[in-house]
Amino acid sequence: MLEHGVIRLIEISIMISPLILILLALRRKVFRKLGKTARLLLWVPLLLQLAIPIQRTSVHSPYQKLTAIPLADSFAETVEQIEAAPMIIPPTQDALPLPQDSPTPSNWTWGEGLVMLWILGMVIMTGVNVIARVKLKKRLGLQPCSHDLREEAVRQMEINRCLRIPVRQSMSVHSCAIYGNLMPRLVLGADFEERTQAQRRMMLDHECLHVKYGHPWFLGFIQLLEIVYWFNPLVRLMMNQLRLDLEYFIDEKLLENKPQKERIDYANLLLSFSADHDQSALQCLNSKRTRKRLKERMGWIVNKKRTPWLIAAGIVVICAGISAGMMLKPDAQSGWEMTMKLTLLQNEATPVELVNTGEIKVWCEGSKKALESMGMEVPVTVRAESWISASGEAMTLTDMQRGAESLAQLEFGEIPESVTCFMPEDRIFVKLTSDQLLQPYPVADGADAVARIQAISPVENPEITCRWGCYAGHQALDITDPDNKQAPILAIAAGTVNTTGFNQIDGNYIILDHVDGIQSFYGHLGEIQVEEGDAVAQGQTIGIMGMTGRATGPHVHFYLIQNETALDPSSLFQ
Image (cartoon, rainbow, N blue to C red; front, side, top):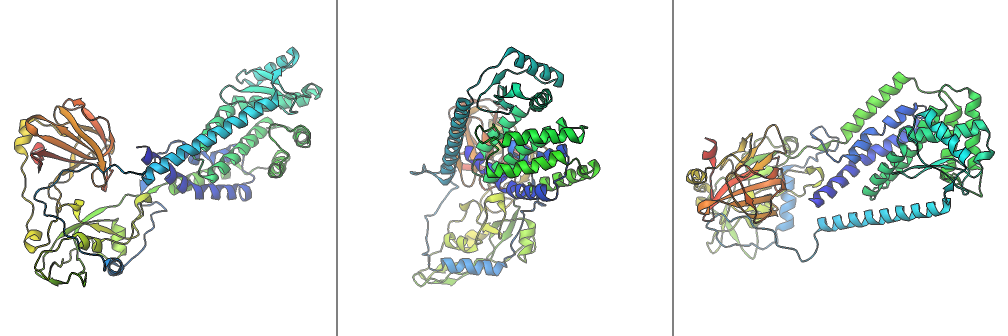
């Protein structure tokens, strides 16, 4: 599950990056005169998406771009790639095999490597932050301040109605600052007593407003986000700008309804801190980049002209709408049942000849728009060509399946460059003969098994989206909950957890043992909530509905098993 979480963070990071660049450019050029609140509200949708990594999907996502690839061209290019591939004849399969766990890889998978890299990055970033804080604490050399200074600071806290926090003094800085996030402290500069009464009041009011609006804790929160999204430098850029906007917010609050003279005095006070090259303030205003920001801040303080609030509100609403739209994940692909024409692959080592023509069904994935963009009407029906080798042996569909697949399918956002077609579940075709192609699998009635274990529905509010045999090789019921895409999956009867696992087709799955050798299978789960060997009661939640593996929407892939044969549980819903 951690792999899915990291991939989701990367997806969110990728989708949010263009927004960060756009807002940074607009804020510095077009939105320079926006008010204090409007500046902060611009970042709210992005912060919410970073903090709550839950993605919404929509066909209207701006990333739902489809490449129009003619079907014939797609096939032709694929065939060219595999013309020289040898034909492989797998052994005949007499019964539908049970899903097997993927073999344990000797090396890490790319997903595990990605998780380890992400964790390593967070550890390094956390270490860097801890070291920086230790160095800062050592440099500050905090010490108790005099009784009079503490009383003056506490009095200003009461006037500003902010939380009373400890007051300390540092001989290493000349400005006032809030130090710490979880337990903040007010730090007074070395020459605080030498300042005028008006300057001391202004400095204390500034820091008290930071505490009043919860900025120390909020800054700690965005620093955590920086650590989580350490791999995206644009997130760090956004957080730096957000810190500056918080300063603008406090400046404006402090100088609200103040005459121009007080604004100029306040600007001069900040300039006096920045001009101190011997003892840097906490804001480190001596760097070139910070001097540029200081110049912008001085202009903001001195110039009282702001965008009218009604226009500013409209800008914020428009930007929020655009942000929400650009953070939509492309809609999951649709699945379409169709019969597909398989191109004959000539191979000198294994000459083949055409035999009887029959129709076979394959499953194609891709949105309806993707299918139509390739000039395909939905649904599509074409003929399939079958063949045998020169020796008279029936050929398999192994290589023909590859010939029918499209060239590429992007995993991110499930955006298809073209439509992907495959044989259902990769296990239903054994040999390519016209008899087998046209002869459906016998229906294994599970009514007796359902009655023996007195089964209940695995979904409390069931809706069957694909019944047994709804397309070739579909030996199960696909059940969803129309009102809950993350509905709990229930044990249909009392039993024991035989197997929990994952494979590329069924995704996360569970097999339960019941009486008389009857088993129940639950596939495509988003989450498994039991372990092998656990005893489960009828109706107990064993997992959460999902769409892991090869699935086109949230559902549970459900069937019964007895004597290694899949049984149709449809009688449960009659």
